[in-house]
Each structure stands twice: as C-alpha cells, then as structure tokens.
Image 1 (tube, rainbow, N blue to C red):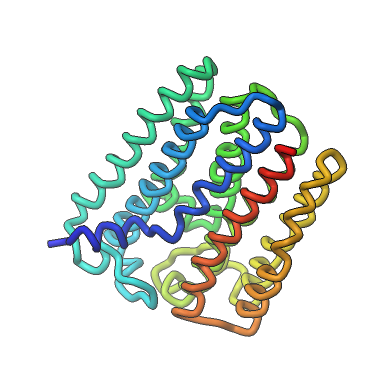
Image 2 (cartoon, helix red, strand yellow):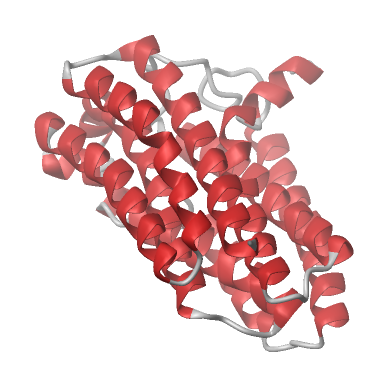
Length: 289
C-alpha cells in the first residue's frame, strides 16, 4: 500500500517551482501596471500547482499502464513500480484537476473574464492527453509544444490578465522565455529517458532528435530566455536582472553537454526547475519596477 511519502514522490515536488514561475512573473507585470492583486495571485498559484500535480499523476498512470515506466533510472513510479493501484493514481490525477478547476472558477469569477474558462478546460485536456488517451501527443514528440503553450504562455498571460486586464509586449516576451525554460525541464527529463522511451515506443522530442542534438536543444532552451528577458530592458531596465542567472545556465549546460546520465540528470532536472523559478522572480521584479 502506498504511503504518504510515496504519494508525495509521485507528485514530483521537484517540478512544482516551474508551476509557480509564471504566476510570479505575471504578478510582477501586473504590479508594474499598478493592478496587482494578492488574492488573485494566490488563486492563480493554486491553479498552477494543482494542474502540475495533476499532470504528474496523470503521466504516472498513463505511462505505467503502457509499460513505459517498467525500467527506470530515476525514482520508481506509483503505477509502473506497483506501489499503488492504477485506478487510485488516476483518481489522484483527476482530484488534482478538480481542485485546479474550482480555484480557476473562483479566479475567473473575480476577474470577470469568463472566456478564460475555455482556456482552463483546454489546459486540463492538454495535461491528460499528454500521455493519456489512444494517441497521446507526448508520444509523438509534441510534449514541448504543450508545455510552452500552457505552462509558459497561458499561465503567465492568464495571471497578468486576471489582475491587470492588459498584456503588454514585454509580458509576451517574458512568457515565451519562461515557456522555453519549462520546456528545458521536460527536455532534460526526456534526455535521461531516451533509451527506455525509445524501446517503449515513446517518441519524445529527445528521442526524435537523438542524444547529442537533444542536449544542444536543452542548452538553447536555457540561453534564449536570457536574451528575451534582457530585451525587456528596452522598457524596464531592471529586466536585466535575469542576466544574474548566467552562471547557472553555464554550469547546467556544461553538465549536460559533457554527457551526464542517470541520477546526475535528475539533479539537473531539479535545478532547471529552480532556474525557471529564479527567472520568474527576477523578470517579475524587473517588470514591476
């Protein structure tokens, strides 16, 4: 029977900073527009965290029942490792999605932007069908597209809109940078799993690119956001704060490019999520100033 510790491990807490990053960035931009709301920011954070946990459990369930997680180098999964019943993991995923939906409904009601409900429904569908359903798009190499759109653009722009009802170009640029950093989290995870994913027929972007090109793509996903963030200095000079992240980008890039594997990549995975959190904080401060 799965313990509380097992369920927390299944929630993949190391990925949660990536969920908070767009909320911090978006709230900073709203503050710069003079329209920030602590209540709406907290609701947006709750939605983001709930959806992240939901997609983590959904992936655990779907990959587990397909046999993709039968052989892993990272921590064992609830479903694939036989720690919890598949049905229980599936229920946990939809419980998390339900929590996110309720919080999102409250946020939409407070903002008065009811059209956002359609985006919320699409976000839940994207979270489930990443590895769920008969033709999961994550198995076709399109996972990064979904992550960029929903955990980058939609999460950041939605946070700003529900508070300030405005979307300046700097927010679009910052959201794109954050989306790329979130894609980098997925990429480094999939680089680690290239051998097992390939055998299981999971054609992630990393599998399609091959090990070396996938590692180079990861580095590009780290560097491009710094350029995008610095570009916002045209309007908000404090956006240059993102350049404080250069030493970490260099360090992570070196580790990945030298051919790190297994547990070493798990550390990079965690730290890349923290890098995204730092980006959200620093660029948020820059856009708030």
